[in-house]
Length: 453
Image (cartoon, rainbow, N blue to C red):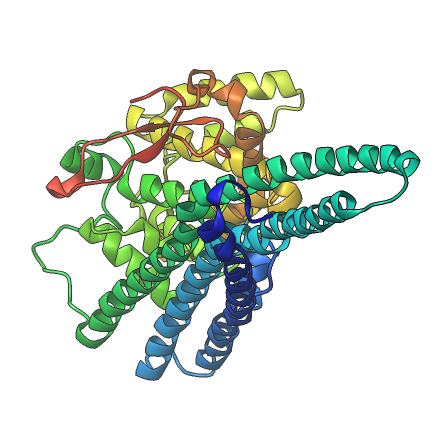
């Protein structure tokens, strides 16, 4: 008996399809530079590109800060890190969209069809043998029953095999699309890598300087910056928080570990110019955190103001928690509106960051230690430096900042909003909002906390 229902052409494609899927799967696995099944971070750390990035980071430390070799190596380190992350992302997509389906096709779906094909052939032979059997009349009755039983089994497997072949025929285009998806993923990976390299190589060679007529964001008074941009939240705060929400929440030692100075410097320049590409810098959360600290530290007046410096410590000195929160709320209400909005925005992010402390090791206390001196410091008198004044008060500042983070939902009750449907699932306390751009430069959707401004 031939293949059922005229399925000869389709039947002839099953074995080659299984062979092709098996061979290509094995070859693709051999092309991977990372280990299958690992989480993104662990996968990336094992890539040769990441090891190259680490070696570059170790190498440039031996040069002085003015060395051109150091500056180029710092940027190369950052770029290799980005390329490693891009490769890891590509291989994860490849594994999910191509390798897993190919493996299932070659090891489960097609073998099942071939198994039924083999069974169909065997039962066809059994039926033919039963029909050809002869003997005495008494034996003929028994043989007739054997023929009928063989026919029933043959009909059953024929129906199953026919359904298998029909299913394969209808899914053949989908199976072919696995290979198209491979090409699409390769094209996307090479395009992203090429554009990133081209852009940064040009910058490394040319290093364009900021125009003297271009007003900087870093070092500019908060109110002046907000008025010039028509925004409620300062560009560096909002941009950096947006990037950290994407990739920094689970980064161990965020705000504590230092990043490559050249990358921080480049990000600061981009923020000054209003030309930040979040996709470029999100992959280095420590650099983003460093730029945010620089912005806060370089404000002419701390975000929590000189005028309220003493009031903050008096409020934090209260022994009873309820009274402490009441006094802190009172001081918060004394802040200028622009300072309050930006402090609320930042503190609510820091509170969200502390919720991941089991992974990132950044408790409210740890965050307050590393970030507090950038939020509150006294007026400098005489020749006392800002660094000296901040260091002298850093222990006290922690007592102020820690409860702000720990009890942010109580101290900023108006900031408990709902999640916008387009917001990444991990950011459950944030909504997305488009804000007016600075210098008429288009700005992507950014994360805004709680009540929309």
